[in-house]
Image 1 (cartoon, rainbow, N blue to C red):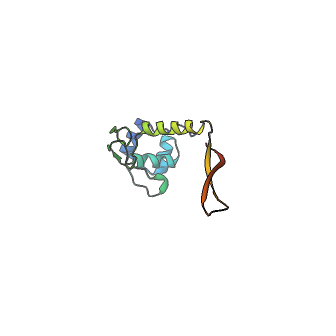
Image 2: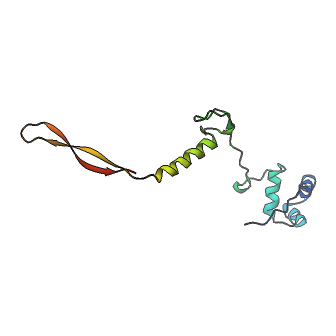
Image 3: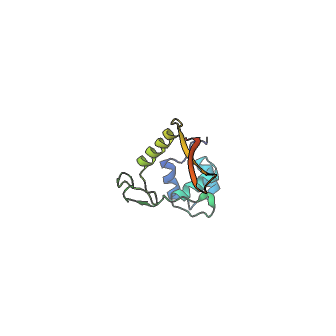
Length: 131
């Protein structure tokens, strides 16, 4: 696990006021952290735009208040998620319990041709386990 970030509210204020007067390397030495931490803090505070995948911020997903297809609640959830989290968890828990139910044997009919006449006859002989 990584170390706790040295970017406190005082450091944020310092960066907002002085980030244009110093290079990233100088800022890192003043704060006492690595250059990468300074760059990430500057991007997070919208003080600089640094092009590179590791400095980009992920936008939160768009949300909607569409009713849940199961219970009808209108809680905000990510767009294209049709079930609320409570219903989703409830279904997942039910699926876990269904997998542990006892197996049952069912009998399937077997079709045979009669020898004298070309007539199909159903005879029940096969047993299958379910579950």
